[in-house]
Image (cartoon, rainbow, N blue to C red):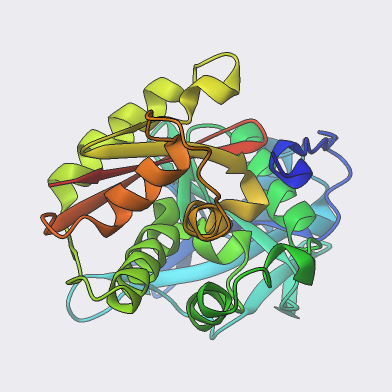
Length: 305
């Protein structure tokens, strides 16, 4: 198997070495009966902004103050919470007050949401139950942003490479892993349909019930050891794993393997042929994509009907 598919990535977890990772704390403001401004973080009220800053820096004392950003939000006429600051502008703590801070495009943000005693975290559109999990995800984003796919891994088969570049160019791990791998699911469907069109097969429609089943199976095979056992194929399902930053290369690998495959004359149908047969099966009308990430690998499952 190509060496990069077995590539292990190691990254350290050092809470005080945040690099380009900032933590966003959202707060609100209301006008009191005496026309005084009241500041709120979650359900906790403060009479002054400096009082709120003191509370927040103590509550989040495990995060350097230089990496804490404040973000003012309020409700629009439809009752939806929206940011008051524009685009990538936030408030950076400076002493007991704040100053306008414009985040650069290479900064990874972790959002902290607090309601009553419940605290949740969001990074890259994905939710996390703890700061450590959100921080680990942010470090992955920072690390994988540096990865560049060598041309030798793409340019074996010209037609599939052209399709792949049209669909995936400019979309790296940060792009396809956002919002529960929304981009990876959608673009995988688009890639499969492009290969099917190339082979005069009708395109597939996406099905969320199949996605749910595929997600369940992906979770199951992510516990498999050794990992080679999670690469399976059956008439209605196929699965595989790949190093996380290369998650968008798995379907191309399946397709290209068949194009360069030379049958041995055995009566047993090879897994390479089975992958191709399932991808190109003209009887299928729908597909769901299941995804599970564990450690340095992404496990992908395609379920057809």
